Image: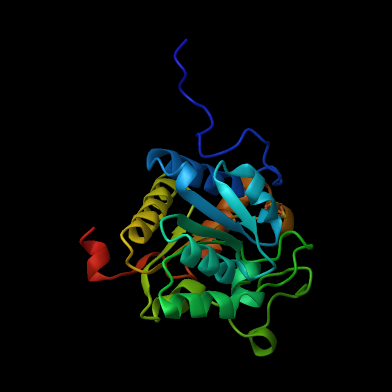
Length: 250
Ligand code: SF4
């Protein structure tokens, strides 16, 4: 019988540890497919962060390092400088990268470290109980903002990719979403381009991906996709936010 669907070789056989309907799984699959299609599984070193994605290191078929909370970009910098021929990427949630890890990511981008950062933005701290994150939307109810995020108290959501794009060392910054099949396809293209940017030695690349947290949001998986589309996409700048001329020439 012809096999028409299977796990990409870039993933291990272990079951995902995510809640049912969480789009972390889709993003994992995309990276796994890119690793396989670019034939770089054995040349890649991933850096896992802390949060729902902390078991990432067991789910991808490439080598992985577990970093401390928020330090993935700093660890990836050390790995890449030690092993410049490897493709090095981090996998971080918004709570990890846009709160405790902000300085590490910003300075890695400012230095133009030749690493790729994958940021998964679900506007909440998922693993620790759905608290307000820097990316939580104005008015969004969370465990620590039960009346909705109040701008006067907590400010506005941090559009992290836009901040990173202002730094000259960042050569490719994309903000994607996995709410529709078309957007899933675009997200895969962005991940592949970010890896190609790194292979070409051009500088820091970041792909931010809007993702769902059905558990933290208190919505069904299907309603979560609608909520993301209706509420997050209008707030965050989407698309290829920055691609330098060298990147466009790839
Ligand atoms: S808590 Fe949210 S982000 Fe974490 S695995 Fe569950 S649905 Fe996904």
